[in-house]
Image 1 (cartoon, rainbow, N blue to C red):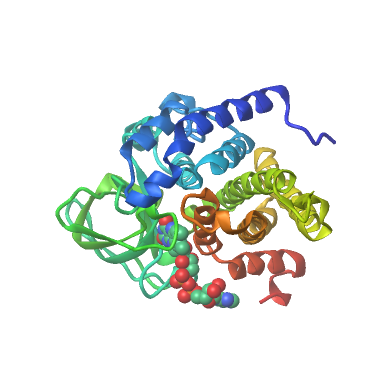
Image 2 (image 1 turned 120 degrees about the horizontal axis):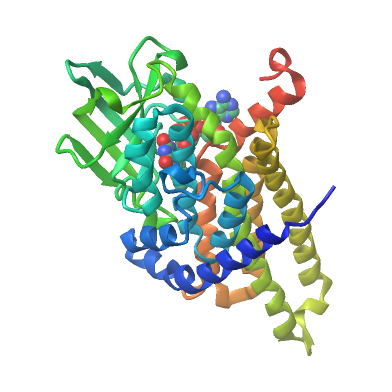
Length: 381
Ligand SMILES: Cc1cc2nc3c(=O)[nH]c(=O)nc-3n(C[C@H](O)[C@H](O)[C@H](O)COP(=O)(O)OP(=O)(O)OC[C@H]3O[C@@H](n4cnc5c(N)ncnc54)[C@H](O)[C@@H]3O)c2cc1C
């Protein structure tokens, strides 16, 4: 058993840390204030290979392992939590395309994602269906040249900025088997979008997207008709562990700030870290973070080694965002009044990580997966 990264993984971690500190961190709070997505961010991330981690080399990608994608997300999460969405989206979507699309489709679609020129999003949630995604109602209607899409998707990460979307739409009867996946051009006049005024991750432009008879060509179907739901959901197993590491990165940097403050800040004639009331909660934060980080990395390691990893990814997804929220909150309290100002990044981190307690599935869904794994389908909820 080996608990450390190998030499290449460690070198990569340091490389991404330096890039993120120099190129991403200075924009974290500025982008929140303008609440606008900068295209340059995608190009900067692409320049570091961060939008092409899971894309095969023949389509312009890094062909990185899932563990490497996790390392990158944790390091980016320390500097600019919102930039992790670009890793999560591109890794999840390119994984779906790699597993299900034809060579011709991959050649046409993946290089743009890799270069940062095509910003992709994924459209599953609808106003009437979130957790119960298999009941989705957006319809794809057959035409002579392909399909037209009808209806509204909502809560789409990068929905305002995206050029293309993986859209799940109903092509058949009820349930998951009636759903197909399409690669849709969002720059069409029949596509309209509106942005949410969000609590956090404001620069990401979470949006509703309305399709009013939006044409989709026959060769923009991903995989076989009726396979869309299953092929998209399989990708989530892996992205959930990556999400966990992004949240942990944001919590780690907050903990480092709180530890430094505990050494520097003096009260009653002593550094505040010498009070157990200050240091013990931070000791607990460090312990829990280490545990959650191990689960995330184990899920990714299992994926890389072809092992079943749904339960581990679900554990990572329910625990890490919740824990990160709690840790950042505790650290904010340790920093005192100076942290309760928008001048400090820590309050923004708190607002931002809460979003991923919901996005990509809530804790309840993850616990459903874990329960079924533990008990067997017939004895679980
Ligand atoms: C920051 C963010 C980013 C997102 N990005 C995307 C995206 O890119 N693409 C996309 O398609 N969607 C995205 N979403 C939407 C997200 O996937 C949904 O919000 C999520 O699946 C939950 O759906 P809902 O919000 O409609 O809640 P609902 O499904 O209405 O659930 C409401 C509450 O009931 C609970 N609940 C529901 N069913 C059960 C059950 N069977 N057992 C126990 N509890 C249950 C839920 O856990 C939740 O607490 C994003 C959301 C957020 C906040």
